[in-house]
Length: 331
Image 1 (spheres, rainbow, N blue to C red):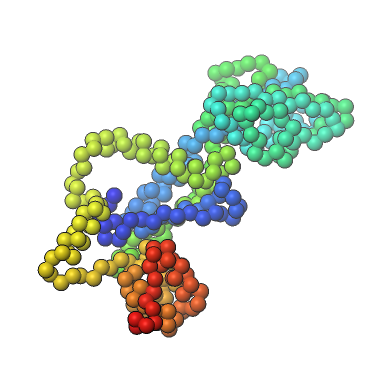
Image 2: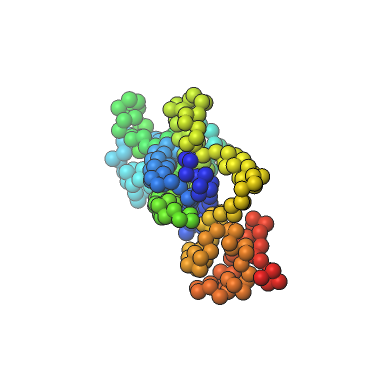
């Protein structure tokens, strides 16, 4: 870790649910980071999340009486091409890596949805209300669908060149479970350092993986590649790599020395207070946790822009670190 972290403290990582309100959509944030690190980490994570996560998709179909995708089916409103496009929207979770075949046998009149698919115990349909096609009265459809688990995008044209088989219609397979990735680099401050950064990453999946699982997989994959560049466990220039045990030892020596003890200064930014509360404290000259704990409730209430809600936020945040404000009797 960068030696700057010894001065500004360890980065704090957190997450919150996105607008969808479930585990498939989350917003992750980490700060403070040294200059340039937010863009480096954000770009690497985004590329891996979009291209390298495993998922399941329909890769090919067989329709009774149909030889190619430009056909029509008697008694079915949609063409074969329309059915293929609808199948691309099918969201699946597959637990096993091996390919499997699921079936669909329906008679009209009926609006066929994804819940009509006969799947195995290894496959879950995540959007069962998806409309696949409509069968008119007297019509019937018998279909076999091949479901595979893979990575990225596998075009049907490439597979059709390699394994052309009469009656087997290949579909462009979009395996990636990640639907959206967006990252932003924001300014962050610790004490007098104003050139630090905060990385915010928004991840949305189709539900086959949670946003947490997607982020964990991407970070583990990147780590596995970075190990090749630093396979030798010997640390190069150890004095310029962050070592928090070294910082603790130096503080202990300072306490035990005869020289005057320098008051510790822990930047207030690491408390992750809301911007409004943080700005009110900094504008009032409170820049460290040590200074904050010496304040009483009445002192904080006199700060400009610091109301009852901010006071409650500060007290709750300090309590998570087993800290409290100074009592009125000590003032």
